[in-house]
Image (tube, rainbow, N blue to C red; front, side, top):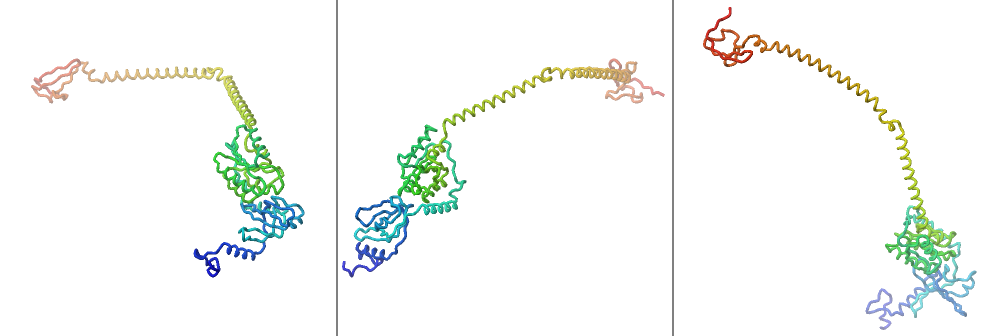
Amino acid sequence: MSPRDIPATAGATTPEHPWPVRLLTAKLTEYLAKAPAAWLEGQVVQLTRRPGQGTVFLTLRDTDVDMSFSVTLAARVLDALPTPLHDGSHVVVHARPQLFPRRGSLTLAADDLRPVGVGELLARIEHLRRVLAAEGLFAADRKRTLPFLPHTIGLICGRASAAEKDVVAGARRRWPGVAFDIRPAAVQGPNAVTDILTALAALDAEPTVEVIVIARGGGSLEDLLPFSNETLLRAVADCRTPVVSAIGHEVDSPLLDLVADVRASTPTDAARRIVPDVAEERAGIAACRDRTRAAVSARIEREHQLLADLRRRPVLADPDRLIAPHAAEIATARERGRGAVGTRLDRAADDVRHLRSRVAALSPAATLARGYAVVQRLDGAVVRAAADLGAGDAVRIRLAEGRLEAQVTATTATS
């Protein structure tokens, strides 16, 4: 391709008229050469200084994400620092981006470097603390309660660290059967945040893990900086599993202590908080059993005494004592009632006899018994006058004893 066919701008390139790689590199180099220098903050991951060379090479890493740049710096700048620079130090550098055309690699050419002091780190941590507190990440109402006896405990700590031994040995001393899912991770340095985040996500996804412990021993402020990292703190706040912070000693207070559901002063204290003491629980059960037995025995004794008191009362000692007076009254009342009823029946019997005598006296049968008779027609009508009959009429005559039928031969009217 002749120089005349090369497009002047990137937007003018086509599959038929592309740019060669060297041209892109040249244009990028030209563009970056115009970029101003900037102050950048990061963590020194790797510091390389060869004897006799005036240039120092180091890698500057972002503390929140996995991103880093190579930095070149004059050795005299490091020599002028009040304290030697080492891996893991937090620094700010004044650097300009620089592209090496042959390798196509982007580096930073720094002309100044300043370590971030403890005061500045504390100020930044305090600022982050206020921001997270305003968002409610430290609020007590979002803290989750730890399970009484977790099925499995997730543990994030340094590989074969003293913190791991303190947590595991302390927990199994209190409850020998407790299970652990241990995820080793860097707990200081440039890879700490990334490693802890990876382990945290894996443990939070495990359904059997019911509590997660993040533990490490004490250290300097810079050593504990990963546990005040905003990305890590927000990840802990978003966990579904309760998180216990067991960082450092009693005096150490990274922001993780405020975001976690439970703060343990040391890894040993974390073991005490996450599992119960089997000896204490047995003693508590025994004491509860004794208290229950004593309470039941006391209740039975009280009821037994109550029954004894009731039996000693006169009404229960001699039940007939209350019944006897009433029995005499009932007998007397019964006799009076029987006498009253007998008298009333006698009077009624006399009345009946009198009434019977009257009825008998007034009865037609008594009249018939005196010799009278009742004459009736055959149709049953009573004959009261001789004129009611004629000669030849048949009549029926009722006597005191029996009846007879007759025929009228003659009638005589009474004058």
